[in-house]
Image (cartoon, rainbow, N blue to C red; front, side, top):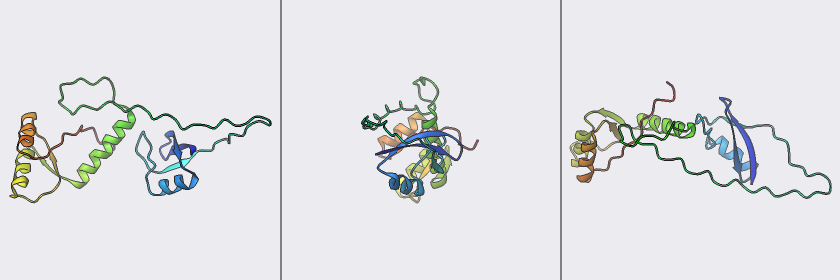
Length: 160
């Protein structure tokens, strides 16, 4: 394993562990190395000093870091549970990317979400990805009817 200090094109600094230098290069080229703050994929290695042991000393093998604890779930807007504090930047960036993907790949149906989901379920409308607004009771009724729905935390767009 190799540890790199990294920097995204926005100047955020973070680190990452990779199998070897080639693994970093391959993942970075494919856009798989993301900044945990802004989600940017233009990432480069920062200049690092090599860990060279002094003469006569053996180098202590560095163990990979312990996995970070999972972030607490972010409640959906309108949820009754109060948030414990501000959403961590990494979670916010992930939710912003998720919103962008939903908006890019699904049709917005607004307050007609429940009715459109029912039409698709009954075959009266083409099946496709949709998003919109639904009350708690509408969402529960859809699930009781066997219609799969998911509530997502809707955060402000990354660009504004």
